[in-house]
Length: 253
Image 1 (cartoon, rainbow, N blue to C red):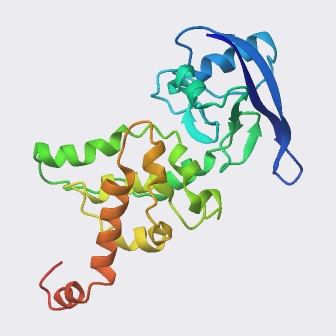
Image 2 (image 1 turned 135 degrees about the vertical axis):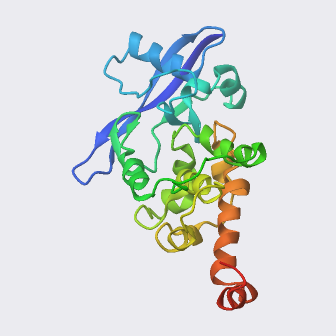
């Protein structure tokens, strides 16, 4: 495939925790079938053994190698170089940066510990304890899509509520609305989650731009199948006058 130049971010946080570093160019020879992660490994092997890059499975299942390639959130192990070269203007370098939404650790590695803290705020499934858990295949299919999430955090990195406004304490972000949807829509979950989805997890901040869905490597329809249905349930619970009256009259639980 010939020689290709990569412009890779190298740096660490400054004393205020902000990214501090510069873009450094590396030119390597590409082989047929390489992905961006292969190229980063070649740069490490040939020029920069101290280049920090997180990865694990190299099969699009662990979500570790998230980064921004040519300005788009992607898994480096699932981003083929032939596709990248088609979109890169002739004579320009392929640009690789860390995710911009999360605090920088070093080079291409960011601190995503916020995700673990948010995960712990969500109550696990609360199902019946005195009967068998049996439900239909159609009910299982509805929540199965959400279970394909690999927690790569690309959707959170792309979300403008997180990226531009840093609402980490007020907004669950698309990844965790997927988890909340998987629980709220589970036929056996008995917990009423709508109040906390509205107040604690701030679903009202989302204006359904679908940017999260566009970058999901697992193909989850985050906006259409998780966020919008949750928003609809919030509207029904708190703002639909007919539903509110019916609830007060005991016509719905």
